[in-house]
Image (cartoon, rainbow, N blue to C red; front, side, top):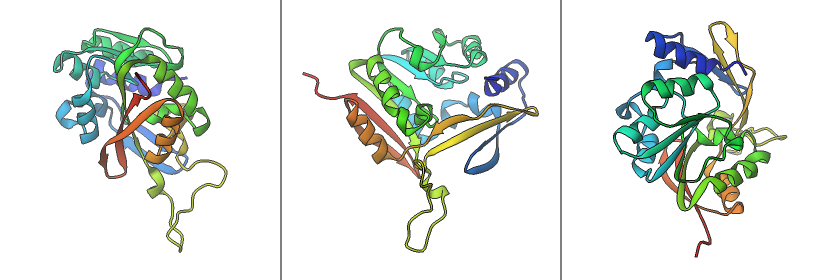
Length: 237
């Protein structure tokens, strides 16, 4: 992978400015994403992020840490032991330079350094699952990384609203795959990243998958079409 998002984060940190990222999906047009967004303060975060950071406790694994804004808040303001994880080397280097004490560059499926009380997956955390047929693999991995009485705090967006309505009130969704499965493209400085598979989930689909993989699940917060969910291990004595 070219890691264009990591490069943009690096450029912004080193120079204070960077060209906007351009993002698009297989069902949406190109949109601008200012790189400064990855460096936002707690007060600039949305309600879902703020709620998740308030609920975090104990040892924390921040998956998809990016520039480390969530990790830094938990480390500095909440005084929690946080490990920032991202597969972008440049993003992890920025995390370190910004003061995140513990960080690792790795794919979550290859990561195995201990277990945690809180696992964070924010900014559409279900995206890393890629597709419906890979959810079980990722949920089993999260289960293995979670302490018995720990929690997974994960957010997602139901993107059904992005599809056209039909006369009977339904939506024109794809017939050959789940409507939340999209290809995600990143453009930066006239270069384009190879598309990645990205998964947006509705709550009921996430609930079914979570319960099938040994979790209890509750919806913590709904904000428009997005939600924050908490997963905990079920059937503990």
